[in-house]
Structure formats: C-alpha cells, structure tokens
Image 1 (cartoon, rainbow, N blue to C red):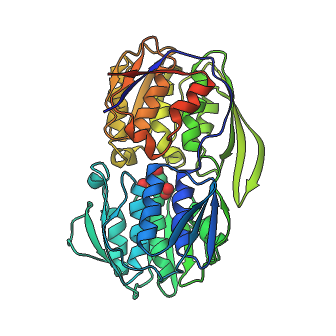
Image 2 (spheres, rainbow, N blue to C red):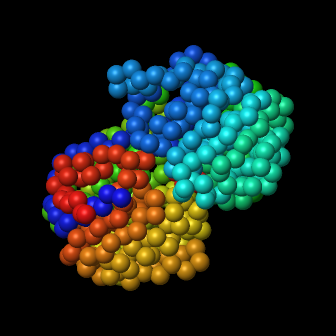
Image 3 (cartoon, helix red, strand yellow):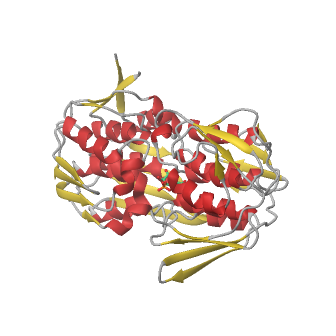
Length: 439
Ligand code: S3P
C-alpha cells in the first residue's frame, strides 16, 4: 500500500482547476445511456468511480467513446438497455451502484452487481426496499449487500416514496426506476438533498414537478418520457475543491482561486460553515453553466473559530465532514457537528475514521451517536499515521490537515484517492504544498 506524508508547507498561491463533479459525471453517463441520440460531455471526471460507471453503461448496450477531451454517449433510450454479458463492477462507488440499480429495475434484464471490499459492505437495502415494491426482483432474496443479481422488468409500478434517510442516491434510484413505469412516481424528502438528478433529467426532456408538502419536498416524475441526448458541461467538484480551500485556510499567507466550481446550494454547506468560522472566502463571477450555478472560489488564509453546525445542514455538506473536522483542529474553540448518522455508511465509517485520525494527530475529538466534537487549539501537533480504510476522503482530509501540522502526517494508503481526485497531490504541490513518499 503506497504511503504518503504531508509536510508543513505553504503559503499556497495561485489558481487551480479541480476535476469535474463526481455526482454530475455519473449522471451524465447514465442519463446519456437512457437518452436517444448523442450526449456529449465536457469536463467529465476521469476517475475510477466514474470510469466504472462508464464501463457499466457500455455493458448495458450504450456506446461510450472519448473524443479529445470530451466523452460521447450514444444512448438506447428509456427501456432500451440490454442484458450485460458479465458482472457490472462499480469498484468503490455507492453512487454508481445505487443509481444503476434504479435503472436496471426498469429493464427486463438480469444483471449481477459487484464492487470492491468497501462497496460490498455498504447497505443496498435502502434502494432495494422501494425498488422491490415497484417490481424489482433480487436473486439472493433478502440479502442487502453486493454482490447481488438483480432482475428488472418492463412492468414496474409507479409509487410514492417518503425517504427514510436523507439520501440523493435513494431519491435518484426511485426516480430512475420511475422513468420506466407508467404514470407518476413521487419521492418525498424531508431534507433537501443534491438535486442533480431532477435538474439533468428535466434538461434531457423529462417532466418533473416539485411541490412543498407537510412531509417535505415532493418530486414527481411522469414515467416513460423520451429523453433526448444533449451536450453537458460538468463543473468542478465542490467536494474536491473543499480540500484546496481548507489547505489555503490552514497555511499562513495563502491566497488561491479555485476555478469554475459548482455552487449549487444543495452542495455548499461546507463553504457556509467556513464563513461562519471566520474564513475569508468569496464566490466570484457567479454564473449559470447548463442549468447549474458555478463560481470561482477565492480563499485567503484566515484565523478560524469553532462553531456549531446544525443537523439540517448535513445533506449539503455530507462528504465534507472529514475535512471540516480536520480543519476545526486549527480553529480556536470547539466545533460541534450534528446529524451525521449517514457518515457511518460511507466508503468507511467516516465518523469513527475521522475521530481516530484526529486522535492520531493529537487532536481531542469525540464521536458520539451521530455527533462529532473537535477541540480546536489553533495548531495541530500531527505526527500520526492515519488508517484510510479504503476511503478516499479520509486520505485527502488528513493529508490536507498535515500541511499545517507541526510534525508530518502520514496516510497508510493513497490508492483510493484515484476514485475521485486523481491529481489531488499534483494540484496541491503546484500551489506550494509538500508531500513525501513513505516506505
Ligand atoms: C451522492 C450522494 C451522497 C454523497 C455521494 C454522492 C450522489 O450519498 O455522499 O458522495 O451523487 O447522489 P447519499 O445519497 O448516500 O447521501
């Protein structure tokens, strides 16, 4: 396992373009496959998670090709995908596996789903439960972890589903199955989760309405639309940008600009929280790019103070908590994060991994129930070796923490960084950060 240490370094200076948004990249490939004609994708994230989705989409009969810096999907239309000859391997990606479950549900095909050791321990029951009600069959019966053999149908029944957990993956899986069902499929979410599925399906021609109800936001999709392939430009990923922003905040004298970042409000809770902590962060040149808001994010080194992060903000920054927790160690005072139950079922148990990593760096932190407390002292002793547990965001959060720590911080395995942000080390090094390979 390749180990890497982050050394105290900086200041960070310059401009950086982080890779394309992971959530939008997965969707562009999958929804392109469900469209008729050509979907040309610019700025696709070329990282292992998304490439696994590209492979799955091809195995289901869509054509996927790279043309210069763009990707082209020639789709089969809703209901037009065909049975794969071998297993669909989603690697480390929960989004790939869960969204595709909704798609396969609406096709009369059998497909085996598998993934790596991390994905094979994550719960699939959250998508299988509503999809079984719509008509999906699972060869393994009640089993709810991969590998699984899914048997879809062209006779799905539409449903109204109230999300029991705030999850865009579950919402998306049900809506994607609803594409194949006659009539209206409705998903109700108590807390707003990322809305890229609704936005992109509408852009490709689906009829979707959103209504506020006492139970929450009700998203209704009319089934069996004809989706038409259209060009998609993927903005930069705010969850990847979060590491650069944190690195600049930590290193005295830093000032960086991260270009063309997605600033959809369902994704920007991290940046809202940083501002509350006293961070000097501005969204510059805010503009619309294919229906999604983007901005250049300017970050200057800032003195930070601990804050309480409300539980209702969790869905809008769910992937950013390891970084926020690590950054909180550099603040003065306690940061208290709530509503974090979902972190237990990410690529690793991120609550446990974050608490353990902070302790290894001599930072006081307590994970209890669905909360996390970090006692910030303005500086971090560091010196620890972090167990990444097959989790890319744990690896990147602690490497970033190490850029300001008194002693180097080592992560035990950097391979998983390739799942979402392959040039993470190169981009930070270009801005002035220092890393060192370790035996
Ligand atoms: C994602 C939704 C989130 C997030 C994941 C991407 C998506 O997962 O953590 O990285 O693209 O829909 P949940 O839906 O499980 O919260």
